Amino acid sequence: MIRIAHLKSLLHREHTMTGFSRINGTLEVDGISLEDIAARFGTPLYIYSAAGIRASYTRFTDALAGTKSRVHFAVKSNSNLAILRLLGRLGAGADIVSGGEMQRALKAGIAPEAIIFSGVGKSDEEITSALEAGIGQINAESEAEVRRILFLAQSCGKKSRLALRINPDVDASTHAKISTGKSDTKFGINRESALALYRDIAESGVMEPGGLAVHIGSQIMTLTPFRDAWTTLLDMAKELEAEGLPVPQLDLGGGIGIDYQTGTPADIEAFGDLVRSVFGNQPYHLGFEPGRFLTAESGILLTETLYTKSSPDKRFIIVDAAMNDLIRPTLYEAYHRIETVADKGKATGPADIVGPVCETGDYLGLDLMMPEVGKGDLLAVFSAGAYGAVMRSAYNTRPPAAEVLVLDGDVYPVSVPQRVEDLLALDCIPSVLD
Image (cartoon, rainbow, N blue to C red; front, side, top):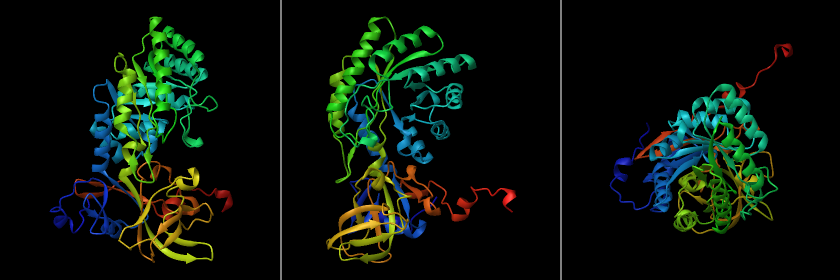
């Protein structure tokens, strides 16, 4: 446990906001100075606000009031064990897409029956491990996968719920690389094939039919795609029930986004109203799999300025964080707000915020309006609590950024900082080369 030195004086301040805010010109997280955290833990560094995550989770669940539903956190968005433990204690289950994520969710204390296993390419080992662990639901995404799951379940004598992920052929109006609801993507099963497969599952006696699932993409800011996908799912459920087949759950997926320009999440209250308007009079238990909405705004990447550089056409701010720490900007052309931690006055013009990696694509922000900064100045990259640290790499043999969690007035390390020696130890030189 790490206690920031000036915490006692800060405890007397009254803060109405959770998460990251500017107090007397300096950025803080839940009343603790980012400068103090950087001095203690170094940079680059991911910093999470437990209070912010709690607030987002409460807002999401409050929006679903009156529905029979459960939240399964999308582990792929932030798989840190401390974050999973925090959300599990708040009541969340887990949505996983690999055997490794299953082990993370279980180690974090999430009950196996509260875990949904999604993904298009589960191996035999992953399927068998999920069955033996008692995972609550497996979502299958192809006929071949259904057949394999039934075979493996019969072989090991274990039974679970088997649901089908439907491809509703709905355009989520989001980035092409995170759009999953159209018929030309690898995800899900078309309507007619799914109906026939569901009948086969029910008749097999090997697995319990678990219902239907849909997930049309990530970072969705409008409600129409959700309505279109959910209506398709509801129509299919009614058709199956008319045949006397049980449909215990409709898994509505995740995907609701945030505005990275302003840090404002999508209108979750309107989202909840839509859920009630579509399913309010229906008997189905509903599942939700938010990720980004719950954690993105409660995390930042803290980085230190190394150098500044100007050319006739550009101003560059070179920092110690790079694309191996946060790949979203170059992978998805994603925008992140970036601010100086200390108040440096008004912006003086545009600048590219770039890292040390030997790639032109190594940037955290392009043409951002920035004040004058110098060596040692700290910058905060906002909205980094989802799809940030979880996508780190050691490219250029750069130890990835570590992570800390601010929880109830204290700062806790939540990942082990890596050193170059640790990275080298992962490789083996065959003795024949000696």
